[in-house]
Image (tube, rainbow, N blue to C red; front, side, top):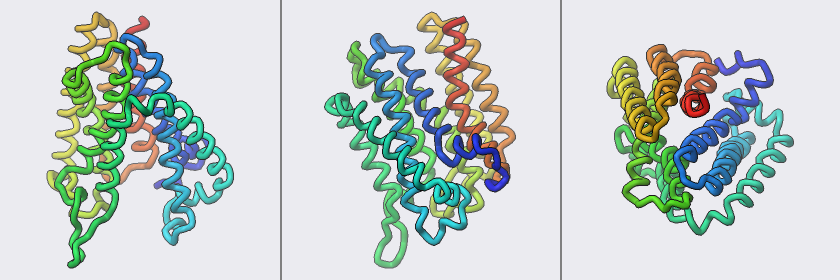
Length: 288
């Protein structure tokens, strides 16, 4: 359980969402490897990482005074470190805003639709009879929406900032290449959340069971690995096309071992860490 995480470093990485923020940065920087001029995209990578830390921090700080705060260990951790987190979240948000401000005219038309999709998903709309309506009621949308939004943030926007002016079709194609990886990881988190998820969400494990969800996740990881290998070979990164497979092998092992009841370190560090491990393995191959 989450209470088993006692080391302060792991608590900061997990409860403080530093690890997820680093994953955002790693995925974005992996995209910049293939750009003609990655200066603006690297600036955006830092802003995106700080922005992710800020977004998670705001949602947690908004809940530390709620009745449910005593139930969740991460909210209790936030409450215990409230003053420091206010400073860190405020500082990270300010720096992210300053970094993003010059880029806003070039990316607002991508970020705003993504923010709108997120809003209409997390807002619990209900009908007059109390029946849930809106995006949350669409089967399988939870994992797919996460995968698409992540891919837009870490792929579509950096490509749009490149000096080479990628076509809309190319941006969409490259973005879709990243979707299977994020979708597979989102399905693994749905396995973790299966006991507590509302059946109305119709997540993959709720529909296909844990074994079926794991099989789908492994298939998606194999597809993503194939995309990466073909892409890297096409760019002449032959060594990286091999080293990146180590990251995917790590991800597949985690998928096969996934189950609803596991210690939080497994999901929050190892599964989330796939988003860092894959680009790291690829990057090592490009510098071999």
